[in-house]
Length: 243
Ligand code: PEP
Image (tube, rainbow, N blue to C red; front, side, top):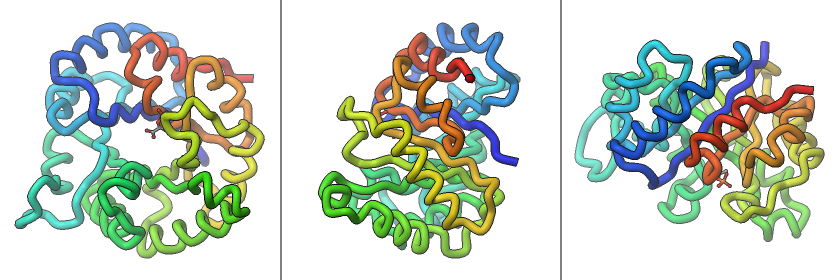
């Protein structure tokens, strides 16, 4: 059965102290959150340990923003799966467009990361999506199908979340129309051999548009960047009004 997954991606924001301050405000706002919603915070590496300790016994799960495919070695700046699981991390974002765009991430390395995450029992949140140029050229479906084909080689669909994140909508305030996000997510689902994989929408999600986004039948949650930094706003997103 498909489940609802709402994740915040803090990117390179928040020190340990700021993360704890966020939790103090955020957690009490989840007291009446519907049981069927999974909530994840993907914090910077330096805040994961302290967040994990403070989230023990709560419904909020911890995610990292990346993970390397080797268990150890000469990979300066990278982080191994066991380093994350040791401190209670259970999700890892892989293939975020900022990693692909600024740090040379390819479908091959995204696939390595997703497989290594699963081997360590971390659930990958795999990001796919087209650029503005690709959308304007009518290549949205082709680009996403190619990403899925390459990124999912050897990946277990029963331990996976996919995020459809049109690159032109990330951090721009320019949200993809809810119906269009629903259409593309339906297309993604039709490419998968299991219909149970939760597929999120990501790209300028905010309190003002979450209800409309979550009213779409194909959309199983959201991956939220900027709007997840504010505990009140992110709690409103988590507590979206179901129709
Ligand atoms: C993201 O970081 O995955 C994202 C969707 O960012 P924003 O919500 O700020 O567009």
